[in-house]
View: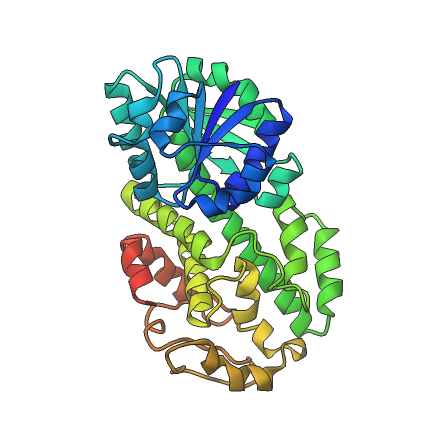
Length: 364
């Protein structure tokens, strides 16, 4: 089948080879052609615009960072909408605002064209291993026409329902993923503070009932010498998805206090200069882990200011461990601890009534 693919960044680089392996011909486009070089060497065909990709394709996929990027490549005179054939299907795999996705799909419907939201759950690692999961929403007949191609990308494909519901589910899923990983980091930090070697704690967690696919590949990143070696989803990217979840909770009137508290931990990571690290970097800012012997408390206290452009306004080298926040972040951080959980829970609940953009601005 002739497949078009828009967005040849890390995820696109992982997905396209699976389409090759299934025998599909792939034509691609990326805003920066240089990023497509590895795929060009492997045989992907190049087109100069999303319109040109769509014109020669039976199915067109896109995966980009946000709603603005989706609109830019999907709509307009050089967008997918200008080149897509009536019998073709456009699937956006991006994790974006559900309302934004529905708005783009509505433009396709007006033009008599078909768009599905089809976000993918997985990292470059799990996609390469053939373990990715896809969620699809929109016209079910169109889904059934493209299902075989989706199964070439990942073996777990689920039809969710009406337009926009797949990306809505993906936002909820990503929020849950962040909460799970942060909970794991706090648990390991607690064990380590009590004297359990970090490596032993990680091994025990991965053999216990809390083990999960996401922990299987992220857990080793908190071990010495590994935290900067791999990035499956950096702090900035995960916080983008957390912002979507907090906005969705606010719009729907659904309290997400754990999501809000997790978002504050990501704020703390950014404040410490860890924005481009995998988000397991929350281990490094945990008040518990910061006081453990393995984290070299003294050197952390001396070097934390060098990680930020703003001098820390709160430092402590007490038995509770050091915790650093840049000046503009301190007013919104609320991290549950055994002594302040109740107040933090109430504060976190209030965050769901505050636009997530303002939460982010407090730490910027």
